[in-house]
Image (cartoon, rainbow over all chains, first blue to last red; front, side, top):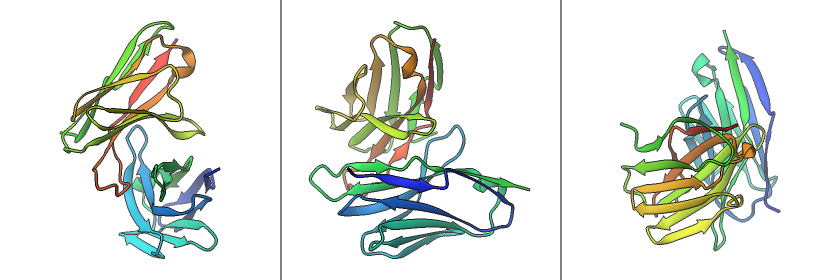
Amino acid sequence: KNQVEQSPQSLIILEGKNCTLQCNYTVSPFSNLRWYKQDTGRGPVSLTIMTFSENTKSNGRYTATLDADTKQSSLHITASQLSDSASYICVIREQTGANNLFFGTGTRLTVIP
Amino acid sequence: DADVTQTPRNRITKTGKRIMLECSQTKGHDRMYWYRQDPGLGLRLIYYSFDVKDINKGEISDGYSVSRQAQAKFSLSLESAIPNQTALYFCATESRANTGELFFGEGSRLTVL
């Protein structure tokens, strides 16, 4: 069964610190992997996209990495800001006829002053 | 104005009532989706449509129905609401390019008493 598991479920960090969120998956093969940011009470918004052949992708202070051998992706946030407080969701599109999307349950990040 | 608009944003109703959640988009995308989000479960697909005459069930379609009235409009109906349908509902669009990027609405919070 295709699965996407994220860890930790929740995380609290001090403003200015770095953090790394994890996404382990079994979806294979896949066409792309995205990280979304979901602010409280809002819809998710795409942060980064990586294809199967890419190892890293950056978007400002957000850097996503992909290790296809271990089937892991991580999202690294540098110099966190209060506005980074949100849920971060890993989403993978399978590369089969159905092209289904598989969602992780997300990591809830809280940045405190 | 938002590219993907959901109405209503909040709704409280009673068991057995018929409820319709509406979604309209100005992005010109062919593909539209309805998801529900529950704490700890992440986003789950209810129904999706790749074109005006195309309707497909997702993983949790029981108790729901949809209508794709036009390319820009996709509505979700609960014919007889029950308390376990209390959730946050999201409409999303995607271009035909199948890049995997979903554009979400702001969400509709439904409470069934």
